Length: 331
Ligand code: DON
Image (cartoon, rainbow, N blue to C red; front, side):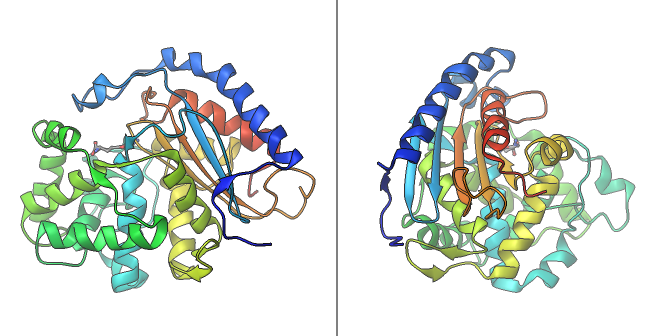
């Protein structure tokens, strides 16, 4: 195996996979009309809801793409995975757990209710906004720029480049982030936010507005699937315990209050964002040797029309189909 390429694959099985993906994209792209773009962030409301793209990268570095796989989209909540990895690498999991718990909520991603219902109000997990704002405030550095730099260093390790900030999306959310601002001020009051509140919010909203394609998210998914090992660079870029901790939170909390059903019917550690991105980390499976990607893979999907929970409508259907047809579930 020579894991040195990130190029379209030409093997017969991969051609079949490619044809399958195209077929499923055709099948599911109209489902976008069952949801809508996340117009609570005005700039996201302007996206074309009918895009649907996917990239799958296998452990040998072969990449299979279909549809709008190169469309740029902002990470939104997918960034919570990266900031969590960065702070765990900086401080270790036990310290991070003192600041943010690792329990699912069953509530909306931007809910405020549990912060006051439980004492001392530690956010339930890093995948909901409250927990993610706390985590962003913990990123290494004394200023917004330094904290963004420390996140960018992780991106460079993973995908070879620092994503560009979509200024329009950032400004649009910054000006309308009343609920996140309320969450951040409340977190400060109860002692779960480091430093200045507006700066923590700025870091959080900037990480959400970093732009990627499905090729980037698929590669990050693959590295997580391999417990932090980068198969192209042949290097452990995330410690194994951090990669596993992160995947467990993706599985239990990554799809918000649909995480239980996702675990049941997809069964793959996955994280969504309100711009319609989905990142999945598929570990190796030993009883599906004749099926595609039995050695594991990373999946990146993008389709901007989302459901009431905040997950991409067409993207979720596509992922579910891939998981069922290729036996991707870890259970
Ligand atoms: O904080 C927000 O509301 C957005 N920037 C991110 C939320 C999000 O992506 C939730 N995901 N499904």
